[in-house]
Amino acid sequence: MSTKPTGHSEAVHYTHGEIMVVMGALMLVMLLAALDQTIVGTALPQIARELHGLNELSWVATSYLLTSAVVTPLYGKISDLLGRKKVFLFAIIVFLIGSILCGAAQNMMQLVIFRAIQGIGAGGLMALVFTIVGDVVSPRERGKYMGYFGAVWGLSSVAGPLLGGFLTESLSWRWVFYVNIPLGALALYTVIQKLHLPIHKIEHKIDYLGASLLSLSVVSLLLATVWGGGTYAWASAQIIGLLTSAVVFAGLFVLAERKAQEPIIPLRLFKNDIFTVSSVLSILSGIAMFAAILYIPVYQQLVLGYSPTKSGLMMLPMVAGMLIASIGSGRLISKYGHYKRYPVIGTLLLATGLWMFSHLGLTTSPWLLGLWMFTIGAGLGLFMQVMTLAVQNSVTRRDMGAATATVTFFRSIGGSLGAAIFGAIMVSRLTVHLTELLPKGVGGSIPVSMEGIQSGAVNLHSLPPSVAHDIGLAFVNTFHDMFLIAVPFALLAFVMALFLREAPLRTSHEPIISE
Image (cartoon, rainbow, N blue to C red; front, top):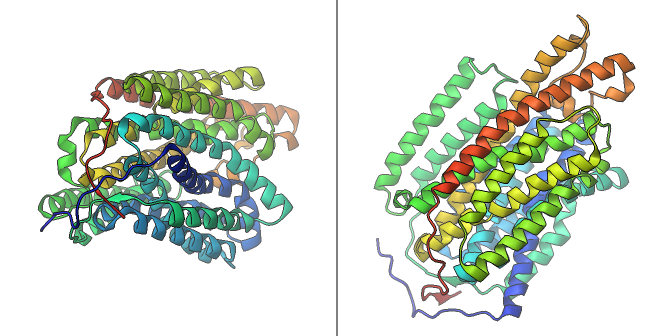
């Protein structure tokens, strides 16, 4: 199949002002995608009550997670084939349509289906934002711009719960979806008017077989992690069957990609040691990261008795650490041209912060919590965007979209595994500690499922003081176990970061044509 450029090659150059307009639109799009991962959580109890669907509540998040993870590598490859801008606009429009449908849902089944549609759009937003940054800015200058995206991601982790709680209490849970419409419309307008992307057009043929096999493998894996230890026992036939099918379909996917003319994930990328190390690093960091992002607010709400709004505000030290480290490291990378040191230091800081949180108590000082959160935030800010930068610097323009989307895909898979692993650890260890600490017969009357935790069924401050103390201590011991288990994942990420080869950052793009 021919891969010759059509038309003459001509590099596209942007002024700083033009770059900032484009970056503003991309950051707005990223805010939409990142915010949607956190804003919905606060509204879930109210959604369950109004739509009478507590049993299906987990699927509101799971359906979004499944579709966004599955389509992420597809967007990268298809954008390499068809051109970045039109595929990006398609993803934004699908995301907005999904948001409108979610806000209008009349029952839980509709909401689950519409969240899946929204996820199809969201997968493209996260993958293509970083790919477009790679199109617009040279690798040497990219660091200082990508630092802002890390800051946006950190900001959304706090703004999401705060905004979700405010909209749910003041208006309706439906506005956690409707709020995307004005923001998305502004982003859509800016992208259409201001984004003139360089592209490398080729005759295209979509790898439908590879896409199908990859989807089946990912869906099997994620369903196993979502259902394992909760809906079904880990040793059950259902979970073993799902894990087996994930491995089988992954093997078939590799075989199919070796023969495909235009593979979804070109296997030649794994011959690039920078790409391979960054992919593994993305999985490990995603697993460790979610232990902090998801469960520090759970500790604050369940043990300290904070409201969702207050727990969101108390996460500000983590956001501050991410802002300072992400923007600062980005500027230093652009100034000096070195990037390896930041994931090395960042993963070590993340491991240290997680170890600190294994020392939580029933009355841990807010100042101490703030210091620990700042440490984790600084660690995340130092390395979150570096893997993308390193990969983009090491691949050709032809593979830019596929490589960027694949690294984003592995980070999503890591996050999904992290959420499932630590969710299962929390429930299992909480059951053990409740049995150890509570008088016989009391533990069975306390709901310890994740649905019970999310819906606020465990309210320590409404229980008798002696029982509340023991339950609180059970939660604290559970968090000790969970954060200690997270530390080795961060240390493995540190070891992988040591193997990340540092290549000189390019100061220009390959000649390409304009869209």
